[in-house]
Length: 209
Image (cartoon, rainbow, N blue to C red):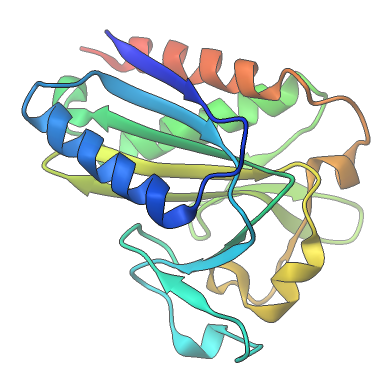
């Protein structure tokens, strides 16, 4: 299993990232490129997935970029870790649901390293944290599958500006909030990228039949 690990130190423009991912998907399909994991950060941007509705934009002055991933509206910006991938599901029984579960397990197991207990929700995709008073999302997941190659990925809020979510109904969910790792536990998350990558690749290896 050959997976290229790519890490961008400077923020990457959203449109440039998606173009790169789509090109990689095409090349994987032609057996011209390895699979990919790409860690990056985006500049401040709102994106709307294939299922979003205009009513979920609360502040009509903001610009929402329509994208072809699954899911609804979310926010990306500084202080948020973006974990993109291009993974060939033809090697993994063409099981999309199992792959989403693999992503969820990767995030949950990684956050356990930092003594943060989170969970997945079948009705509301993403990774959630329950504090004393409410349930809040700490990681958003949005995946698209083209010719059995899964791409886009997930984001984890580390220390981003949570006020940005006030302009939208994040992921179309009205009754739950959004939080960040620093809000949950103000500790050092310097190794988060590496732990996520290691867990993701380990889970992928275990999923190959």
